[in-house]
Structures are given as structure tokens and as C-alpha cells.
Length: 128
Image (cartoon, helix red, strand yellow):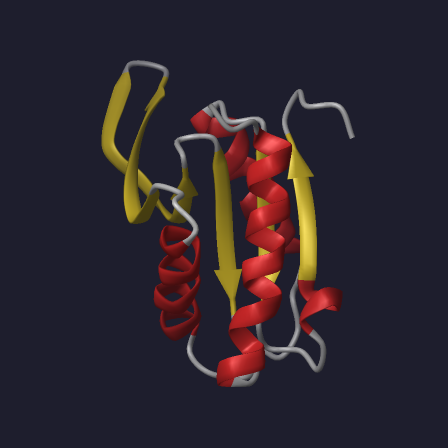
């Protein structure tokens, strides 16, 4: 069984590889498909646009939100391809992580000049 940090390393490596082949600035859905492909090629199980249910008080939402990618049911990746990532984007990634109960997530921004600068690590009860 692969742990969160190992998955995270593989996710970052794949996220850096994808724009090398495609370039930066395309639609997020293109990067999502390519990144899922790269991760599956190395043997990881990936779910795309996974509906995530949640409860709020007495209300159950079958689809509270959709996670862009969930890798091995352990790591969430939220993908953006915008001019600039906002604090709200970072907050969304952290909230998605908390609501799923997963411990590790990433906000991956494919709209900047360099992919490495577009990687934000989010944790939920996982040591930094």
C-alpha cells in the first residue's frame, strides 16, 4: 500500500511532466486528463471529477462538490488554469481536503509561467 507522501511525490513529478509536453495556459480539463493518464501509467488508481457527498446538520448532499482528481483514495488534487491563483482557490483546496477526511491534497496551477511555482501542498492532520 502506498502512503500519502509517496503519492504526493509521484503527483508532483507527473504535474511537472504534463506541461513539458503540452505547455502552460490550456484549459484545466486538458491538464486533468493528461495528469490522470500519467498517474495511471505508473500504476496509481485515479478518479476524475469524483462526486463527494457531505452532511451539514440534518441535510445530506449526495454531491456536495466534485474533486478534480482523487489518487488511491488518499490524495486530492485540485487543478486550476487561471491567470492567478487566489486565496479563495487555496481555501477551496483545503476545505475539499477537510470535508473528505483525506490527509493530503494539492492545488496545482497550470496557468503560470513555471509549474513548480504553481504547486501548493495542503494537509489535514498529516505532519508537514
